[in-house]
Image 1 (cartoon, rainbow, N blue to C red):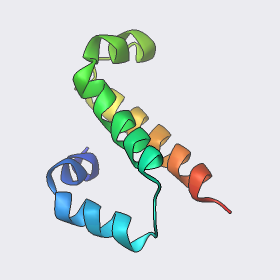
Image 2: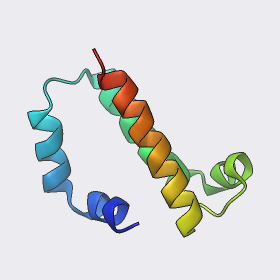
Image 3: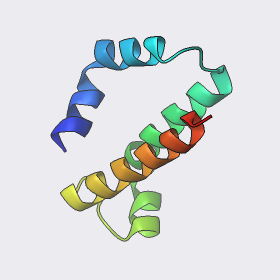
Length: 77
């Protein structure tokens, strides 16, 4: 959770990491932003899909891991 919380509150680090990773298309950037924001904006949907409170440690850990996997697959050549 600390890593996820740090990424939420440290926009400069996130922006720098994105900038150094290379160019990202705007649709891809928007999709990424949507994936990160979805549990916050639509907590009832996240609760229904994952069966856990979106603010719980369990959800944050599972969701962060899934986001990491998605990004890794998209970044692979």
